[in-house]
Image 1 (tube, rainbow, N blue to C red):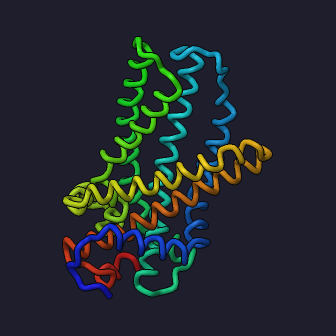
Image 2 (image 1 turned 60 degrees about the horizontal axis):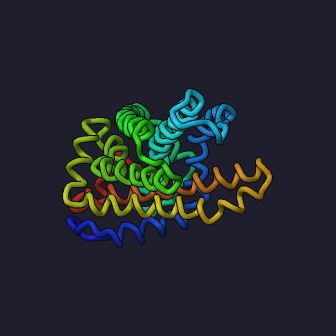
Length: 275
């Protein structure tokens, strides 16, 4: 067991997270999948509406409809990602306590904390909406400006906007585990306090996950386009679930490391909450 008060180290968090994720991959994928089944159904239904003529001008009504539906899918994905953190967090803490993590115990534990988790997830969801509205306003202004919107510029602005969003949300990295541990009592303030002085490290974790996820899709982009549509969707959703499950493990391990440094709290002290 690590000594209480040991400093939060990025390398240690990454190594421990990847090790736990690798050993528990079937379990964490199953836990994430259960939460994401409704999201998959809704997104696939909405995808039927996502058809856009390449010749359609920017700012036209069909283009705006396409953007709004895509934005809705992204926001919905964020909400379900936050909700899926809870069962994975319980599984990770079982591993940290050197106990077997089971599917039913993880789901049962997350259901016991469903109200604070849902409240925290909805709070993050509303913040995402506000940020998305600001992003949409920026895009609208750029579209109606005299700037030449080349494919490269659009891609650069898209990635730049997403990276900026990651930086803005860095202080809220451990809101969900804080909501579970504190039973919903000011998890946003707790996350802000715990991540203080470590937000660059948290941002680096987010960039690592984002880079791994985006890199996977870029590498497999041509291969996915050559696959039958159903198989391509299965591969795409599998990559997404892998990314979400890895994120959940990173969040759980980060919370544990931050609590140890700031409060000298180890998993043995969190036993009552995560048992």
